[in-house]
Structures are given as structure tokens and as C-alpha cells.
Image (cartoon, helix red, strand yellow):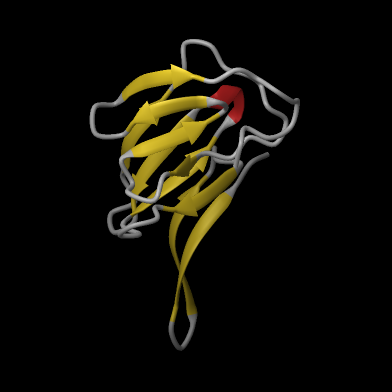
Length: 108
């Protein structure tokens, strides 16, 4: 089962947040105040690092079904690519679905 955690490090490692449904997580690029997670079926979740609260759940109309899908932010944290679907984070909507060119990676 998918399972990811966020830890803080100091004198000891302290668990900050659990992401039980996420197969893969990574920080936003520009400010690193958000974590983006990748779920099955091309779904991406965005969480606030400080509170651990989910900020967005992005479900595409049609997913590409990549085997090694990993959602990620662009360098400005305004766009998200997940399973070959480009999202505008600010407006919470799909911008474009890219053609599937292979079975494994979605261009990242």
C-alpha cells in the first residue's frame, strides 16, 4: 500500500505528516511550502507543509495511465504535470492533456 511521511530533523527525527494514499511525494520548487503527492489513476494531491492540510485534489477527466507517474510542480509552482495532464494550480483546472508517447514516464 502507498505510504509517505514528512519528517523534521533536529536533534531527533520527528514525524510531521503522513500521506497514506500517496505513492510518491515531492516539495514545490520555488518556495517549498507545499508537497505534491501522486496517487493511482493520475490523481495529484497538494498539501500545505506547515499544517498538513490538503489544498487541492486534482482528478483528470481522462488519465494516461503511466506506470511510473510522478506529479510535479513547474519552477514557478503555478503549473502541475501529472500523468501527462497539465494543470493550473492557481485556478484548479486542467489546461491540456499531452499525448502518451510511452508506457512509463510522463515527461519528467
